[in-house]
Amino acid sequence: MLRSVKSQIILATSLIIIAILGATAYLVIDQKTKEINQDIFNKAVSFAELTHERVITNYEDNYLQSAFAHFDREMADVYSLNEDIVEASIYNYSGKALYEAEAKGEIGSEDLDRIQAIYPSVKTTKGRVVYLEKADPGFRSTNLNGQAVDSISDTEQIENVIYPFRDQSNIARSFSIGYTVTYDALFQRVRDTAIRIIVISIAGVLIALFIGYLVAHHITSPIKALTKGAAQIGTGDFTTRIPLSSKSEVGMLANTFNNMAADLEESTKAKIEHEKLAKELELAAKIQRDLLPKELPKIENLDIAASLSAATEVGGDCYDFIVKEKDGNLLFYIADVTGHGVGAGLVSAINNALIPSLMDTYDNTEDLVSNLNKILKMKTAPNIFVTSVIALWETSKNTLQYTQAGHDPILHYQSVNDTVAELAHGGLAMGMMEDIKDKLSTEEVQTEINDVFVLYTDGIPEAWKNEKESYGMDRLKASIKTYAKSKTAQEIHDAILQDVRTFMGDYPQADDITLLVVKRTK
Image 1 (tube, rainbow, N blue to C red):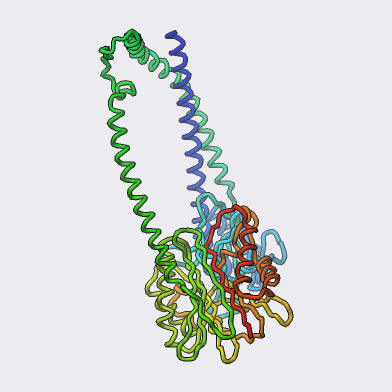
Image 2 (image 1 turned 120 degrees about the vertical axis):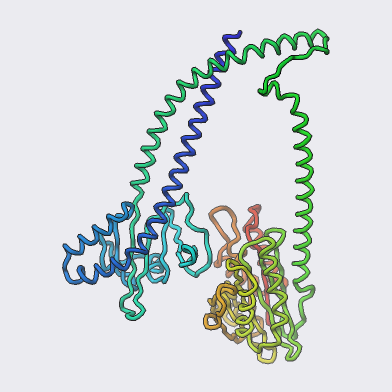
């Protein structure tokens, strides 16, 4: 029996050592890979930043002068500075390849955006493109529109870096250099690490067998005492005590209840804090709901419907309809603050509070947005911004004036020809820079009876049915066209939302969903 226990302990000890070594090997290789991934990314971007002017100078001084031998020597010297860069390509602003180690001709539209961008960009092996806006320190990761995105993580590998060269004194000198990245060095270092770990693991198993034998021999003595004591208790002798002073699990058994009591106390405190936080979030959500209009205004020639469904307790969407007292015109807007939670909700509340106080000061939506942006930029964090559309319905003219600040386009159902058009959009989100007046997009739209305007946040087109398929703009336009002939704005609104919910099924809502429907009735 004792030999069987020893064998089991030896086996268990060996398996534990093997498991530890295996887990350690995995963690070491994984950490090493992540560190090298990040190192390759940082070095590639720094290399591109340091060498792009040198590459362009070499291209102009040697390649264009047919001094190809000098050009190749210079490029070889450039490549020697970073073993992870295997190729550099030069493109002009229109996307034409001026020099490539392996000529590929005209490039695709996605890469053309990168070549024409003012900021450098990287493309991962999975096709994700991240633009790198110069910041202090380092770079700020954005998309093509300047919106903040996740930085390149240590689990991602990059395929290439495109770095722009712009001569402010000579527009014709506009180039972009593409640097192709290789991970051969990474794979070699990982292989070397794996070999070393295998050697260490073999030695560890041998040591484990020896340690297991010693441990098994040490454990059998307390087991004998426990067996004898258990037999005495089995006969009814409850005064039996096992005199063990070991600090092992057996000796620590008496302290378990004390530890459990301490754990229960901590668990109770944590539960109280959790309930307190839940109450605070519930209160924040109620305050945010109270900032939304209780009743929609009655306008003689308009029918209005609106709703907001937050993805979490506190969301970042907001809207409002406000009648201007001096002329009876209707000001309404929709806005989407980056992110979710209390932070986004607070900025949303600030936005909702500021607009009514500012709207009578300015006669047009563009000035209103411009000055609202200045306040938001001054009062909110640098990484918080607000996309918005602020519109003004001029009752006497039956026209819609609106200003776009980086929000999704208004969809206009035109009853005359039974079509749905995207109104002009663009502009820059509020809170990104202090003065955006020259970047705003303001338009005025003439309307006909039964025309419908639909304003929404990106929670609708980006509503997911599964991990691969989203609702999209085409479905939204088709839904509007189908239901815009309904009698009331509320019926149109409800039908669109029902179509979105049916599409989503049981898939969880990932973003706030806000929908405004405005219909001209006469």
